[in-house]
Length: 132
Length: 300
Image 1 (cartoon, rainbow over the protein chains, first blue to last red):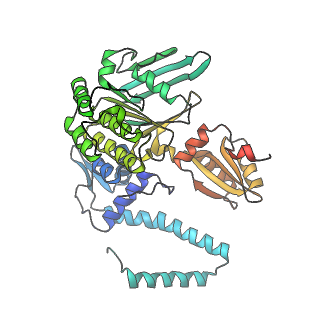
Image 2: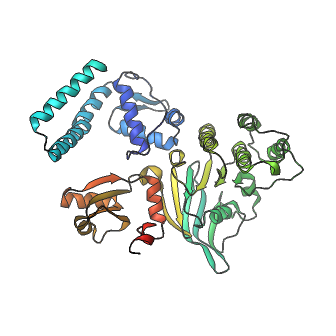
Image 3: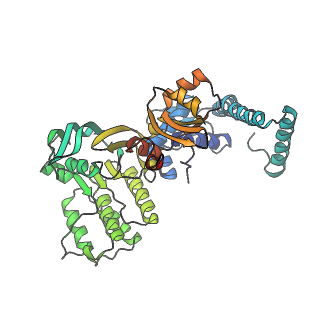
């Protein structure tokens, strides 16, 4: 698997986000053991300490919990937590960027909304909506 | 536990000061990248750690002992570079056999598998190998020895891109299997960045920075905007890199924490903020002039 190190995001953040995506699309179930830092290191060709840092982000946010000597497991409320977090941070920031760009280009609010609606239609037709 | 510790280490060759007052420690089972431009003192530092050279002043401890001419250090350490010499009368497989006799943790199975993978001929002689093949063979010795302290000094000299990639992957996978303290020197960070835990930045014989790689990425940011805005904002700040963009714009690299404070005070004000790649930052931190090579050509 290739990680994009050219992009500004630190690799451990990319690891955390990759795990979140795996959780959101249901590849890791509640109370299931998640990948160890060594498995992630091998999969992504990164130092295990970097992988551990990615795992720890999610543990600090209560998305994972630790069983002593057994590793990290997925909290029952993980999906909910990830969704809340991403909505209030990631999505909010993306929206701000979109609004900033629209202002810069003199695109009206109505025009912007219709663009968002169009993008949604294209997405519905081609991809469908993942997860639930 | 620290495998290596240096206190105020200085090394002079005649009038040349190759290393100047360096203090650091390297913890057990970490992979450290020793990064610096040509002539920074990387090889000198590694040879002192390996016990091949004696420090002019200061204290060096490897496995809690003075490494110079030390048998314990020699038996637990391997130093790989492109100057390695082996007896001309021995074939590659004979060299492997004698390495196996010397290194306690030697893994012959790993050596054989790597030999096969890289299509090395066991009956070949070391001095007949091409530059890249020599580096590949040396790398196999370095990995199979599985020494508690493994030092690679510019290990990929002459290797093609594919072999370099394989080498770093092999190093990581064998490290996962058998963790040990590893130092790799390179003037290029981007190739090895991902597999490192720490980075040690050396230039002009001095330590610039020793930090987890993941922190390095967040150490600095770049700002781009109108020159007058940038100049006013960054006055009094340590600037790592600066260049002009277009007619009246400027691009500067400063510490992230400083930038965050400044931006909070001044607002975005038409400024764009960019991440700085770790290897670019290393170049900025070790470069001779703030404006880089452009400073030679500007105003000329």
